[in-house]
Amino acid sequence: MAEKDQLDSAVREFIWHVVEIHAQIGDIHKSWAQMLGITEPQWLIVMAIDELDEGRGVSGIAVANKLKIHPGFVSNQTKKLEAMGFLHRAISVDDARFIQMSLTLKARAEIGNLSIKRQALNSTMFDGLDEASLAYLNKRLALIARNSRLAYQKLNIGVL
Image (cartoon, rainbow, N blue to C red; front, side, top):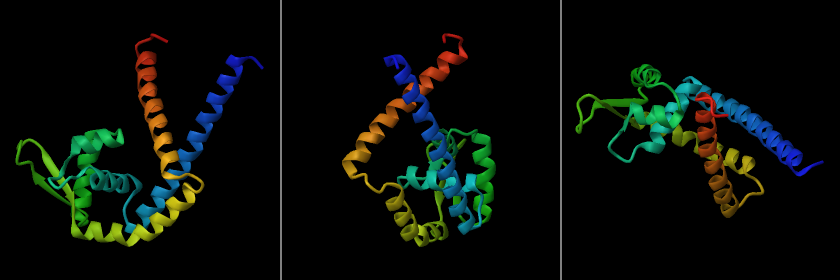
């Protein structure tokens, strides 16, 4: 097999692995969401807020950008999460046009209750990889993600 054919084969194999991992992680997110009585998209929003909040709350735009979804969807779902007691939404002190969101004590407690299961799940998922291996893999995946965005842009403007 020629070198180009081997590279194409390796790329296809990588893509199929990503597709499988994506599907498995989606199923895992659905399970976590069901345990909390929320939907999978709501679970992802809660997780994004948990990760992004540095003590001042998080904007819907920041959550939408993190999850690569429409800000209107985030707004709609966070209103539901607030009604369920998972989020607190407040007008931003920096700009009254924006809402800052943070997790409630209820949400933090619910997430805390899942932490042992989540740690066990992560141990299973990443068995055989140490911290250095994960750091290396994350750097490479970040590069592929950046390059994928560029490739998509090229495809959309007809450069490819």
